[in-house]
Amino acid sequence: MQRRFVVYTDLDGTLLDHYTYSFDEAVPALRLLESEDVPLVINSSKTRSEIERYRSLLGNKHPFVTENGGGIFIPEEYFGRSPVCDKRSGGYCIVELGAPREELKAVLESVAGETGIRLRGVSDMSLREITEITGLDPESAAFVMERDYSEPFLIYGDETEVGRKITEKGYDCTRGSRFHHILGGNDKGKAVRILTGIYRSESPSIKTLGIGDSLNDLAMLKEVDFPMLVQKKGGAYDEDCRLPNLTLAEGEGPAGFNSAILNFFVRYQGKTSS
Image (cartoon, rainbow, N blue to C red; front, side):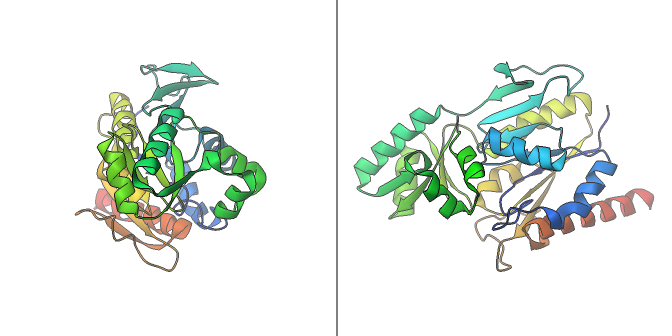
C-alpha cells in the first residue's frame, strides 16, 4: 500500500491532556487521519501495556514505540514484507533498541552514590506514590511499573550534575512531563529513523509529521519532515525544544494536536489543488 504520510505522536501532554489523560479535544484530527488512511504511530515514554490500552481506546492498529525508543512494536503482517526483528511476541515483530532496565537501575544507583544526590526511580516507588505523581488510577499506574528498556526517576538536587554523570557513563538522560528518564543508546528519534525506513521501503515518497510538547520529544522532532510543538499547560511552549522548521501549534495538549493536524492538511490540500 502506497502511503502519503505517517504521523508520529507523543502521548502525555500532546495527544493526551496532561491532567485528565483525555484525547477528546483531538477527535476531529483523529477522524481526519483515519479517513485519509494516515498511520498514527504512538512514540512515547510509556510502556507496552500503557500504550496498548490507549491503542484499544483509539482503535489504532499501527506500529508503536515504547519507553522513549526502547522498543518498536510492529503488528505481524502490517507490512507486505516482514522487517528484521529481534524477537516476535504477542502478535508483534519487535525491534529492541534499549538497554535492560536492571542495567539502567544500577547506573542510577552508582550516580546517586557518586554525587550524593537522592534519585528515586519508579521501581522504588509504591503504587500509591505513582498514582499521586501521575494522577493515574491504580490499574493504569501499575502499567507504569512494567518496564523493559527505561527507568523514569525523580531528582532531589542538581539536575545538571546528575545528567552529566549519566552521560559520562555512556548513557542518556532526558526530561519528560513528570519524570527524568535514563536511556541506554535509544531515543525517540532513532526509533523514528528505523520505522520510517521500513515505511519508505513500501512507500518511497512518504512524508513524516511529528508532534510533541517537551524536550523529551526533540529527538523525534529532529527526524521528521514536519515537526510540530503543542503548548504546555498555561499556554507556554517548551523553551528547550527548538528547531528551525518547527511549527508552533496553537492549543495545549490534545487541542494543539488537533489544530496542528487540521491546519497541516488544509495547507497541504490547498497546495496540491492549486
